[in-house]
Structures are given as C-alpha cells and as structure tokens.
Image (cartoon, rainbow, N blue to C red; front, top):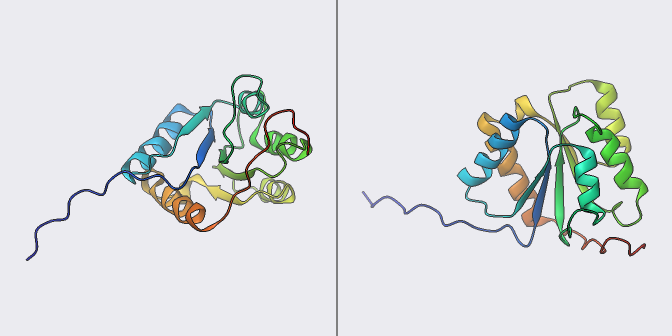
Length: 158
C-alpha cells in the first residue's frame, strides 16, 4: 500500500477573476467554501445585487479585472440578475462578458429570458451539488479549456 498523497496545492485557473453577484449570505458563503475546498485560489469579488456589480464593472467603484466570469443570482433586490445581464449586453465595454445565472428558479420564462441574453449557462442551485462542489468543479473545467476575451477598461468603447 502506498502512502497517502499530500493535499493538492492551491491552484489558479489561469488569470481569471470570479465576480459573484449573490444577495444571500448563506449561498455566497457556500460558493466561497466550495472554491476553497476545491483549492481554487482565483480571486472572488462578491456583490449583493446587480447595481453594485454593474457600478464596479463600469469602473465607478473600483478597477475591474481584465478577465472574469460572472456568477449571478436571479432574484436579488434593487437589480435582478436578469436585469444585470440586460445592462451588460447593452454596454459596449461589457457585452462580451461571460455570465452564468445561478438560481433556485426553474421557471421556463426565466430560463428563456436568460438564454435570450446569451448567458453561458443557467445553473439551478439545487443541482449544483452538495455545498456547490459540482458547480465549482464544472466551472473549473470550463475555464481551463476555453479562452476568455480581455475586457476593455471602463469607458473605452469598442
């Protein structure tokens, strides 16, 4: 019998930032724990609603990273995830952003509206695996194989 393997070192899935837009503290903590358990050390920036995230992405409250994936809940106060995606798609500096919707809503209208706005995926939280581990594993594999565009700096219309 061979000795047990040492724990896997933390790794970065390339230079990728995760923008988590989630109003529920419990769900946000579960996603953060899942990334930590999977030993994925990419920076995660959390915003509580679409307005906070949009202000950041537009450079109004900080400098957004060049490469990122957005994980957004649908049901949030002030600006929902679907409203956020609509705003992102209207903005010439943001329209290329990769967005996944993460939600408890299995409503076909929500799915249709989300995919009509060219989201990368619609993820039901109850199918994301225990403590979101399946979700994190899927996302880790996804961004290891795909190429993401570098986003232009805020205000640099394309």
